[in-house]
Each structure stands twice: as C-alpha cells, then as structure tokens.
Amino acid sequence: MNHIGEIISLGVALSWTVTAWFADKASRRVGANVTNVLRLVLATVFLGILLWITVGRPYPVYADGQTWLWLGLSAIVGYLFGDWCLFNCYTYIGPRFGQLLMTLAPPMAAVAGWAMLGETLGWTSIIAMAVTLGGIAISIISRDSGKHLKLDLPLKGVLLGIGAGIGQGVGLVLSKIGMQHYAAAIPADAPAALSGMMPFASTMLRAIVGGAGFLIMLALGGGLEKLKSAVHDPVTMKYASIITLFGPALGVSLSLMAVRYANAGIASTIMAMTPALIIIPEIIFRKKMIRLKEIIGLVVSLAGVTLFFLL
Image (cartoon, rainbow, N blue to C red; front, top):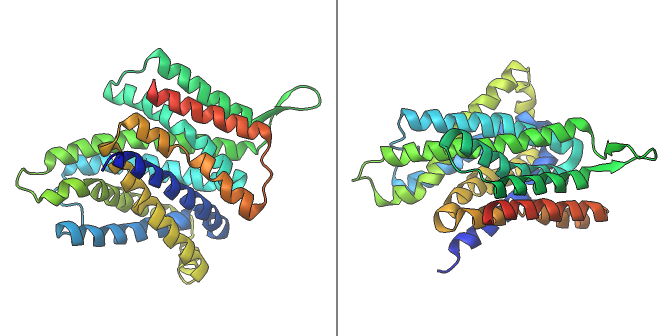
C-alpha cells in the first residue's frame, strides 16, 4: 500500500489531538499525576494483552539491561518530566497553546540527536528552529499600551509548555537509542512478529517505568487517596481510558511505527499537525475565538517544523 507511513502519521496526529483534549479534561478534574498514573497503568495492561496475542508473551521479551536503561531514561525524561509539564500546562493555558509549545519538540530532538548521537545540525536546521520559535512568539506575545512586550498567557503555563517540548524531544532521542539496543538484543531465531511489535513492546517498557515513577511521586505527595477516589469515578476512568487508547497505547506506538514506513522528516511533519487540528474542537465545543495573530503564529510555527524536516 502506497503512503502507508504518511497515513499512519496522520492517524498519530489525530490520536494526539484526542489525547490532548481529554488529558486537559482529566487533569483539571483530578490533577496531572493521578491522570498519568491511570493512563500509564492502563497502557501497560493494554499493551501487555496486545503483545500476548501477537508474540505469545505479555511483556517486552528479549529486552536486555541496556534496553531497559535507555528506554527507562526516555520514560523519565519524556513521561515523568515532559508529560508532567504538559498535563500541568493544560490547566494554565489549555490544550491549544500547550500543543503549540509542543512544536518545540522536533528542534529539541535535533539538538539532543546532535549532542548524543552525533547527528548533523546544519544552518538550515538552525533557521527552521528560529522560524518555529518566531511562530510561537507571534502567538503568545503582544504589546501593551506602552508598547512594551508582554505575554498573553500565564508565565507558569508557558514555562511548563516549554518543559514539555524539551522532555518530548529529548525523550524521543533516548527512545531511539533504546530501540537500537532492543533490536540488537533480539536473537535471529526470534518470532518474526516481534520485529513489527517492537515499537509496542518499547512503549510498554516506557509505560512501566513512567507509571511507577508517577505512582512514587503521588505517594510522596500524599495523593494516594485522590488516586483511589479517581479509580471509583466513572467520568475520570472514561477520560483515562480514552487518553490511554489514543495516547501511549496507539499514538506513541504508531509514531514509532510511522518512521519505519515513511521518511522520518515527512512523518514527523504530519505528526506535528496536532496544534492545528485541536483548533477544531476548541471552536466547536468551547466556542473559542481564535485571533488572527494566533493563526499566523501557528502557521509560522508549523512552517518551521516543516522546514526543519524537509530541507
């Protein structure tokens, strides 16, 4: 089938749009840590069942110490730091601006790839980063009556959004290193299905580490009672189930699969469409008025992401 990678990438963008919408709802209802514990525990169960059906083992079989180390580090950076920042930023600036700031993830991944993997970071990439940052600035910065620059959004929310972009980008590079170790650890006589399911097994490993980390954070903060109450709340569990299905279970796994079937730049550009797609439910369900400068900023930011991958 032609363009299967591109089709998967569009599915990822749609999945992350759904995830962002319901993550905002859940985080406002029970908090970011409770939401992350629920979704990562559910994701671990879902992925375990999927692996059991496809490869006969309900866990990341053949994952060695190096695989656990690097994918575990990616979970700490991407989930414990990145998603904690993302889910909390939703409560301050909403999913639309939260996802806009997530366009920082590709440039952050490029910087991390240059630092950790020795990947090339040329002038075109630096220009693309500048365009992306310029688009974000157009969307969130304006002039007051005294012609001074000011943020249109709460500073805390913006900083959390920036942290989310950094966590996502660096976490992706750590995941790439972990999957390289995972591929090397799989013996030649392993079931053929395991190669295709490796992205899902890797995601399960990350979910285990991330879920355990959030649970520890919740326990240290005295939030276990809140978690217990959330488990018995049908609305919260509905939100958590939707987030799980479209987030770590399908979205993250399909994103890893997409880059196997399509040019990484094209796939990443399509997956970066979430900030544009999320405008639709914002207008329909929340009756949000989208200012012209926000649309311009979004277009410029997405143009920067596109330039970054396609030049």
